[in-house]
Length: 391
Image (cartoon, rainbow, N blue to C red):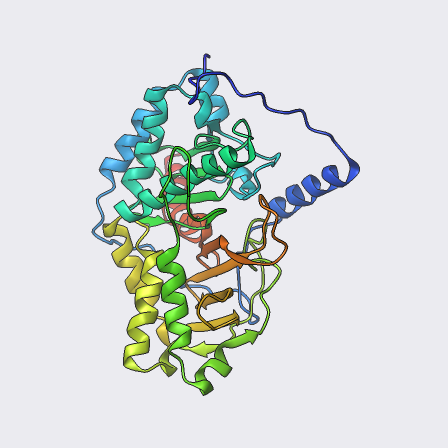
């Protein structure tokens, strides 16, 4: 296959120096992904029965047809490399790093324009306009950092891997994953229900001050609303919400933390005043509304049903311009936001130039796993019973 390159010459992907430390780092990730999946849980352990199979009114025919068109356009070799069973372990191999060695699927950079657009059409039909624009902007900013560092072969807008899981053409559960530097999106469909987690999105820099995508800016609403929410708390509320004066080393529920135990901490949602609650709901909506509206609506209802069990927590500097971490955590949703120190740039302390976010569905429904389990119990048990009766 001849790949269409975005800037003419084919990039030279640099050889890897396989140190013992690098080998162990990769093997640790393999082991973590191979653990039986449980999901992010609280200190009390796994809570069951939170995600029933149900009819949401969502019509998934358009996105399913988009999946079918993409798969039909691939060669047999591409299908072998870019399509996996619904329960395949590679779902859990996603990671944020620019230099990372467990990528799978088909690299968008290696697809011609037509097939790349077919892949992006699946993403577009799954996400809201806001969500899709955010994902594209983050991919564009990956090129920005490549331009600034002179490393466009390693950091560019199409160096992302796309995978399809399951069988959309047979009406079975299916999903997709978009995986690369600062963009890791997992999307699963079980009937008319969609799960859009884990989703890790980040940027460094958050604003392109020059280059091909000059003017692109991301995460300013997530940042400003977070600051507004916590700055608007009373002293008593802020004391309850504050985890620490300094930021944690990283997000708690990032890559390879699928089974992480995270205690509920901070200020409960129902301890907010009405105006404060409106700001908190608006902030949470920025993350829920990344999904297409027909999927965001039932998700928002699910999240709101657990408001009395939703905790808001904070770390960092509440002053204007300060850097901070915040978390929104309930039995059915986990959101984390954090200002980060430099990785691509030379700043050793966190700044507003580098932001990471993650969204998860706790208690076993990341990757739609709990819905898929129930689907198999309901339908495959029927298939086995019918088969036994026919013998």
